[in-house]
Image 1 (cartoon, helix red, strand yellow):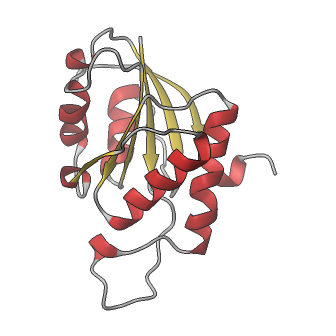
Image 2 (cartoon, helix red, strand yellow; image 1 turned 60 degrees about the vertical axis):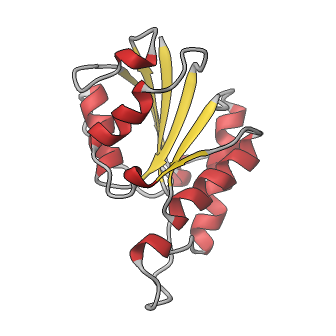
Image 3 (cartoon, one colour; image 1 turned 180 degrees about the vertical axis):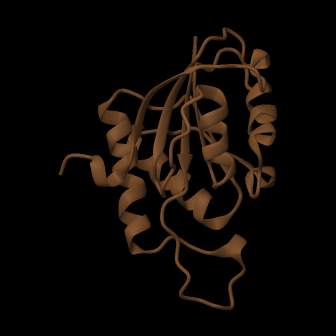
Length: 164
């Protein structure tokens, strides 16, 4: 059994019209919610063994804030393919994860991240900004994950639903 945490990037800013979509930073709400989700994961004893993130500014800033808040001290793996990535892009990266890793967090974008949650769990849930889906996968080797893998959605957390 492997565990997957799928997170949509936190809320981003549209204030600077000169920035490309790829370069948009987190806004104030995103800067608050990303570490809140990291703290929540630590409280749930769900610190990832590996964090994989889109290279887009808002996703990477989210991953870095979560990592700091939950106590993740390893390198974050960053891939441009997750920017506008579809579920197959996420699955291809997961399939290359070493078997020693039990819990992976992926930080990405809609619609790909929401589609992946739906594909892996058959639970078609909304993934608002900074939401985290916790999915248990019935595999022993990451290389076995594919488009036919069906796991169990254990939880879906949104910042607005957290205590405090």
